[in-house]
Image 1: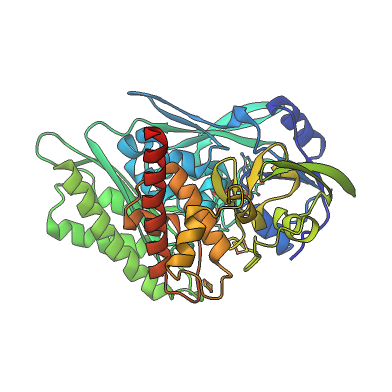
Image 2: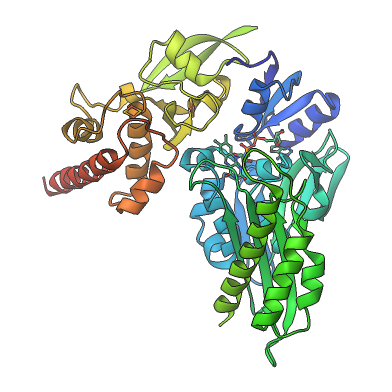
Length: 291
Length: 164
Ligand SMILES: Cc1cc2nc3c(=O)[nH]c(=O)nc-3n(C[C@H](O)[C@H](O)[C@H](O)COP(=O)(O)OP(=O)(O)OC[C@H]3O[C@@H](n4cnc5c(N)ncnc54)[C@H](O)[C@@H]3O)c2cc1C
Ligand code: FES
Ligand code: FES
C-alpha cells in the first residue's frame, strides 16, 4: 500500500525542530521509529502535510543513570538499546520486561520509548511499568519546557497532553523506593508480534519491621482507554501485611477497577478474569523478590 | 515531488529518483530490481521485508526511502562474498529450511543480524531472534536448525582465520 502525499523534512538539531513545529503547528507528524506512524499513514488515520524525521537527532537519544536519583532516557532512544542496557535490566526489571515483550526484534530495533507513550495506544507495553515506577516526562517547545507525570500525559486512547508545538524530549524514572521490587506481566494470544489482552505492573515496598505494605503502585494496561492505576487496590493493601486472604480480596478489587471492552481479541469478562489472575501472579512475584 | 536520493546498498552507492512518501521496500524492488527482499503484509508483522541497516535487522515496509540516506543498507543480495554463498544461505539449502521460499530472505537477514550480535546463540535465543519472521510452510524446526549449523560453521571459520 502506498502512503498519502506529504513533505518530508529533517531538522538539523533540536532547536531547528522546535522552530519548525512552532511554525507549522498542527500540520506536522513526527517520525521517530515509524513503527506506528507509517501504519497510521498507510491506513489514512493520519494525513499530515509534513512528516518531520527526528530519528537522527542524537540530542533526543541515550540514557544516563545516577544511583540514588534515577534514570533519564531520551525519547528517541530505541527500545532495543534499552533492552540491552544492564542498568534497565538490573534496576528497572519491570520496564525491561515491558520492552522485551514488544513486537519483534525488528520492531524493537526501530521503535522508540517516546513513540510508545506518544502514540498512546491503550495496549502499549512501556507505560504501565513506567507509571508504576513514577516516571515523569519532559516536554519541550520554543516556548520552553515543562514536566509532568506520565500518568497525566497519557489522557486516553490515542490522546496525550502534548501541545502541537511540543515534543516529548525525555523520561525521568526516579530511583525505585528503597527496599522495593517491581514486576510486569501480560496476557496475550501468542509470544511475538501481537497485542496484549491485559497487563499489570506492580511496584511495592514493605515496612522493614512487621512487613506491612509501605509503598505501592498498581497499574493496569489494555483494560481501559489508557493505563489505569488501581487506586482502591493500592489503598486496600497499604499499611497492612499482605496475607493470602488480603491478596485474594485485593485481586477482586483490582479486577473491579479494570474498565475493559469487548473486542475481536477477547471479551470484557475474560479481561476482568485476566486482571485478577495477573494481579495475583505479579504481586506474588513482587513479594518473592522482596524475600 | 521527486528528488534524487543516493543510497548505500550492499556496499555500493546507488542513485534513485524517489518521492517523499516512497517506502524503502518499494524502492529496493521496483527501482533497483533487488527483488530478493519481499513484501508480505506491508504492516510490520511478517518480517519478509527485513533488511539490515547499520547492523540492525529492520523492516523495509515501515521505512521511508529518504530516511535511509547516509546509512549502510544490506539486502539478501549483498550477503554472499565474491560469489560464495553466506554460511546461512548454504545451511538453509543443506538443511532443507526452504519450501516456498517467500520467508527465506527475511529469515536469513534476521539470522545474520542475530549472529553479528551473538556468535553462539542458544536455541531459545535463535527462536527469539527469528520471532519477527513468519513462515507458513516449514514449521520452523529446520530453519532453527539451519541457523544453529551456520553459527557453528561461522565460529569455525572465525577460529581458522585467527589461527592462520
Ligand atoms: C508488528 C508490530 C507489533 C507491535 N507490537 C507492539 C507491542 O507488542 N507492544 C507495544 O507497546 N507496541 C507495539 N507496537 C507499536 C510500536 O512499535 C510502539 O508503540 C513503538 O514504541 C512506537 O515507537 P516509534 O518510535 O516507532 O513511533 P513512531 O511511529 O515514530 O511515532 C508514533 C507517534 O508518536 C509521535 N512521536 C514519536 N516520538 C515523539 C516525540 N519524541 N515527541 C512527540 N511525539 C512523538 C509520532 O508523531 C507518532 O504520532 C507494534 C507495532 C507493530 C508494527
Ligand atoms: S512486509 Fe514488512 S513485515 Fe510484512
Ligand atoms: S518457506 Fe514458505 S513461508 Fe517459509
